[in-house]
Length: 447
Image (tube, rainbow, N blue to C red; front, side, top):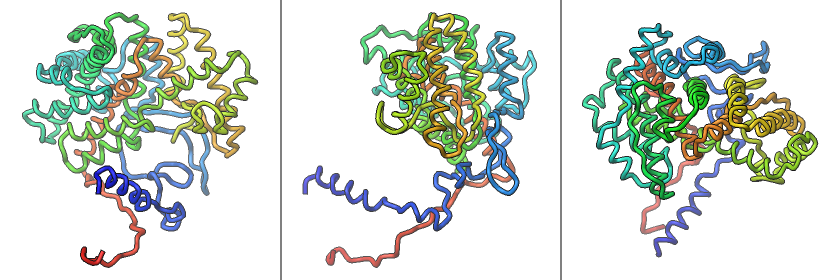
């Protein structure tokens, strides 16, 4: 039997072996995707890190949509963001300190923490050479391999004491921007034949500024402040999002930090999680080309209706960037990012493009409700504007998802540290119901 046929035969048999009737999930009250029937997440743990609020439970059953709220250690992210925007200062380091420690830093603590971050941004020489030698065109994959490489240089890699966990957290937060910038410049050199730039991080710059400096050197102050705000808004999103839950599940086995974070990267790499902003950007460009009058509500409504009916674009029946697992009336991250996107569009001379995107957002929500008519309240999510902002800053699509990881590493570390230190910790071990009848073993001679 030819090897190619063996693979084909196995794949065909796999299709039959993996089929499970949907009605069995209802019969055995199984929460598919850890979701309740009303779409809310199954409660599987407790946390003090972050909180995502998008609805209220109505006495007697049902959900009431409310404006979305996101809290970091009890602090409303809108308050955090608006204060940073008002003072025109960088805030990602402050948010990282808050999520790791549980409290807001004073000026001295924040300054010392910033110095610690900058001290840890440079990579080991072997890690730099490893990035240069790594082959592949997916930076998330290179990021995961680089994180696993960091295990080699950590004398206490297997330790889970609180001081080691915190040291590892700081080092990961510090090194992610450098790894991603170097990995992209290597990809740019190897794939597109461009010059290879390896710029050392500057000790006088913030994380956002340093990343832009290492990536492309030239950027405006607003570019850096906008990227900083994106990092702030994506640093944490509760313990239930797929990548953070993955980190907590893996961490509960007491494995090392680098293995747990690499698992989180693998989760975020998936298009249903971290790659959504790329899908929004691609959709936006498609609409730019196919909507003749960017001010025509009628033309936009007609096209969105056809998209939802799977007639045009990728025929998925989706409008990317609309809807969220928790948020209903609004996603606070999208509202905050929209404020900065407007300013950035003005600086870059892209006000017409921003106005078109804003109108698309309004009409998409309206048409979604009209076509679906399922009683659900939906809003735009953070991905609706993040890709547009990345383009205005001049960032390539290859690093959109890695940038998400650069922000979320803070939340991952905070949740891992909590998972390994709270008193009621146990290895996470849910159950699966077997729905196949027992079969008697048949000796190989009789098969």
